[in-house]
Length: 539
Image (tube, rainbow, N blue to C red; front, side, top):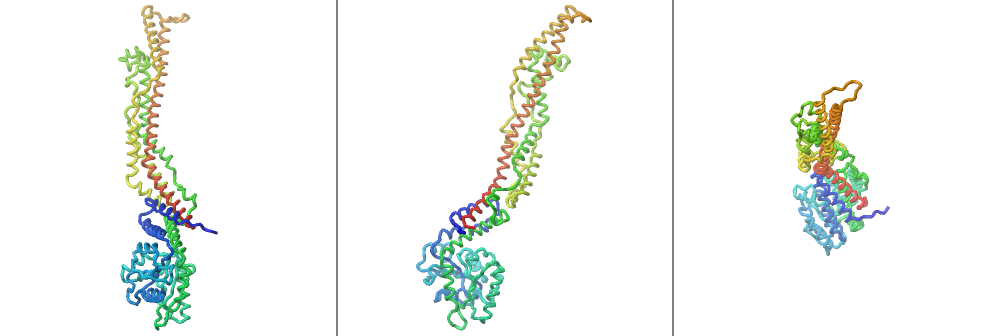
């Protein structure tokens, strides 16, 4: 299968993934990956025709002697002192291409020796990884992950050194295609022992994760003073394996792949996720919780008690509007039996005002508790980094503070209605009740002028009809208008509560939902970009 590589796109996606990792992954995890991404970008910007390799090994392994043997002339000091190589030295093709010069400057390798034996390969002689000088070990730790290829120089005495295999080989095992292992000083062994040591070294390397290690044997500086052995074969292998600039591109590709997989592993627990999976966080939706919490806060501001009070205020307002001039004139009789029959209000409200001052104590306590439950549900269902950031974001009094902010902002924007339009038919009922009151008065006058009681079998005198009809119909009208007013008052209160709930819902989305969603969105973005980087890098 042909794999199409787009290193520029891969690096762009990887940088985007790393940017999105802030606020999702731990700062220490981001800091551990960021240098590798920066180095890959720097190498990609300086890709030329030359591959940059490095000799890495312990004290006495003969790195400098090996470089001198490759050069055919002394280019670096060799010996058994600890340490011999104190500064990295680059053995570079002459003339040296500008891209390589920029890369060496970026790496801080300023000691350089020209060569013409391997025109497509530059070799850095690194200090000993086990040097007693901490500065030398720091140079090895800094440069080893940044070169295109590593030539591991081992000796018969310390070829199984755990400090080398566990400290350097194993952490860089993802780059094993860029490795070459050289067993130096084989002149100290018999031919049979060389076979045994090479086999044993192969077992150790495979245990460290190197699938098919390439091991060459050389004697760069034989103890008997004879000519170096195995150098021609080493030079041939270097020409075949490391002089192709594809090696440098492969190192950049491996940097992208390794960094992307590290990000995905930290974000999802896996080194690869499907494109559809990368968009899914199976956590509870905030929308129903937002509406529930908004209703809780609104219910605390406009309580059920307030709704009942609004109903009563509406009933009183209806009674006041439909009582007519006579009812108002008899206002002094409010609370009496006659006043109630005539529909007189016990206490006239301010015209058009149905909502009293809120008696609610606020629903903040229950609202915050519900939000805390939702956050716990999200944290339990979300990927570990999202859960960690959500818990950190909502720690302490954060949710309680947000609920208070939501309530204060909503109340500032949505005040209680100050005026209510009175139904026109209430006023018509006032006119009708005025006429009915006049009928009652006329009946009373008629009884006063001709006092008489209804007799069985005879027609009811008109004064009694006027009084009974006027009082009865007025009572029915009063009950009907009061019921209408109660419905109006309840509706006003419920509408106000709904308006507050809508505002609270909007503010909850902004102050609570948006920060929570941001964490999830950054996680999704990071995973998508990391996956895109892997695809562009052909992984």
